[in-house]
Length: 405
Image 1 (cartoon, rainbow, N blue to C red):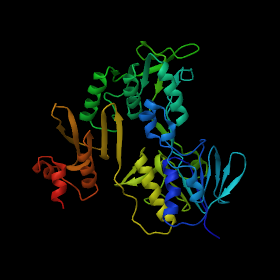
Image 2 (image 1 turned 180 degrees about the horizontal axis):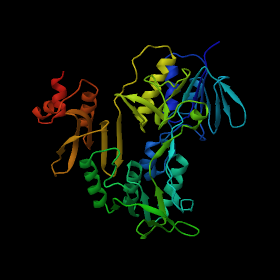
Image 3 (image 1 turned 180 degrees about the vertical axis):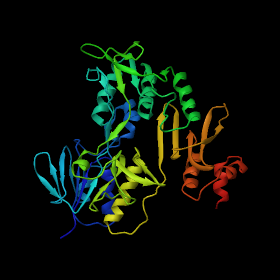
């Protein structure tokens, strides 16, 4: 009997896993189960291009015909309620069961919701899926004043689009700089200057205490008692990995579903990929919120299921964010950094930050510098690169790459 693969989660990682299994020659039954209706779609454009043009047709990752042609049993709008490890089955919400020999959990993450009063009022939005984005875009078209709670990628991408559309936008960030979890201070400062220059009222080290309003949201109350008027509130305070299915099945979870270097849980039949997976990278437990990581995870797992021997997963992480005319690209992870070196464009604005830990290059942040970003990805994927080597090359990443052969 052919081995059966069930994939729970039909986002970019789940779909990539199904497609990669077929590309690797896996011939057994593949079932892809997603909790949203419709075809699998791209999430990154929801806070950027989709917010501008509202064209959902451009988001689909594959046409409907792909599933029949690839012999993939795609089940949209279907909830997996439990994993029965003893039986080797997933249990659907209606009680039906689907058997597996290999199970891939691509359950993603959900918005983190702080315990603040008023978040259930109409006019308060989150942004995670297409339905959220459609509601938010419609509200943006009618809004005069918006308050964004959270100064990370999603909040700032929306703020840039809304401000360009004529909405008066205020961004509240609890930390003392923007995108503090993702970038170093020079890059934070560059984007602070951009958003303020675009008319966004950015307030750092500022906490919301709740949403004001009786029947609809009318403003955001700050911890000092000030109320900022708003007819649209976007909650963009990060995400939490969806680990409940795994935990209830007795699998280890710790800021994600715990997996080894091949993305397997303690049950060798069960893998986890993407935003929900906590995996070892450079000796650290790591969880990445990244389309690139989800797709790379999926390819790695597909090769394992197809019977290929391969080294542990170690792909270089990279990320991007489009905010107005600025494209932020990050190669590597800056966790634990202790030194930076910034480069500037002709106008004196920071456009590249080289990030070091213990004298070794660990990440590169660029703004509208695609060539440097690509060079950084190649360099960071290679042997360790020391600060003095870069200094001797006048910090020219492409020159160092060319010299490396």
